[in-house]
Length: 67
Image (cartoon, rainbow, N blue to C red; front, side, top):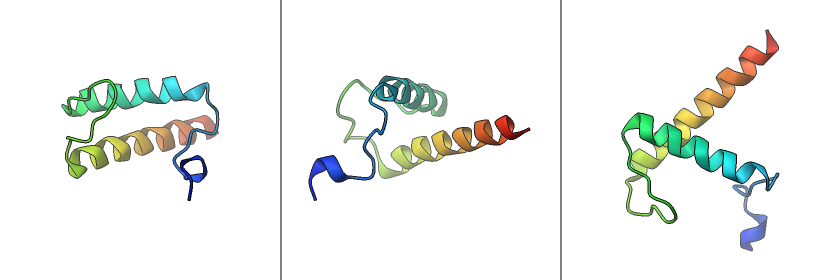
C-alpha cells in the first residue's frame, strides 16, 4: 500500500494546517509537549489521548450543529 492510499490522509489539503493547529492546541491542554515535525518520541498513551480528545471535540461540535 502506498503512502498516498492510507486512510489517515487529509482529504482537503487546505485543512491540514487547521488540523495541525487543533492537534497542538489539544496536546497543550493535555500537557503533552509536541514539537514541530516528528513526534515519535511521545508514548502511545499520549498520542492516543490527543487523538481521542480531538475526536470527542469534533463529535461534540457536530452534535451541537444539529440543534
